[in-house]
Length: 232
Image 1 (tube, rainbow, N blue to C red):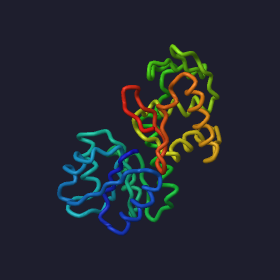
Image 2 (cartoon, rainbow, N blue to C red):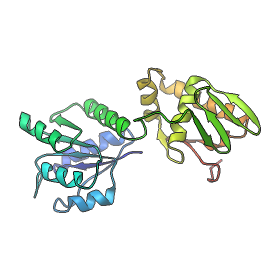
Image 3 (cartoon, rainbow, N blue to C red):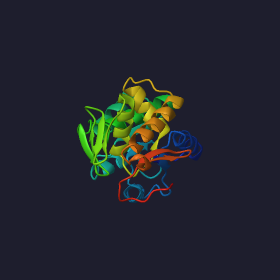
Image 4 (cartoon, rainbow, N blue to C red):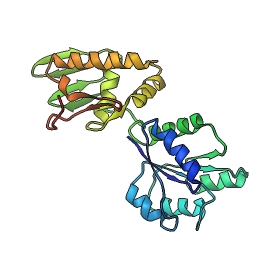
């Protein structure tokens, strides 16, 4: 789950944005004291910052400068101000995007997802081979092998396993998996995702690894390390 810091002083708008983004499995934190934004930024350690321009005490440009002096975290400006100089200033200060109010949530979510993909674990494909739970995963050949044998996965199963392994011990939401599969032009539906994960687990059961792919009801899936405990 990615953590976002929303620096917005309009409480009703903050609540609405937080509610909508939480439906996409984002953990959204806010600012309790606008005189100490940097202290709260350091405490939250967000993966992405969304910031308004017009704020109490100091404007969003000031806090963008302060954040950029310490971090390369992605920043999206969210503002009702539409003057071109505001957008130019945002980019010059190191912001990654500018969304004008009022806005469609679908656009904001799409921009957030695109920036997160570019910045974090989706900015480059993992190596074609990985080690996991004593097994060798060959994503080019879609094979998983250990001392008990080898199993061949479908392309979708291999792609899902790659995403889960890349964030092992962390829950990957169903929405995130489907967005990645759709973004990769694999066009997978919610029901098809369930079928693929179940089939992946059964294939891994053949070499004693199925137990390390877990379903977290209402949240998503995760791949555990061999040394981690797991729920039955």
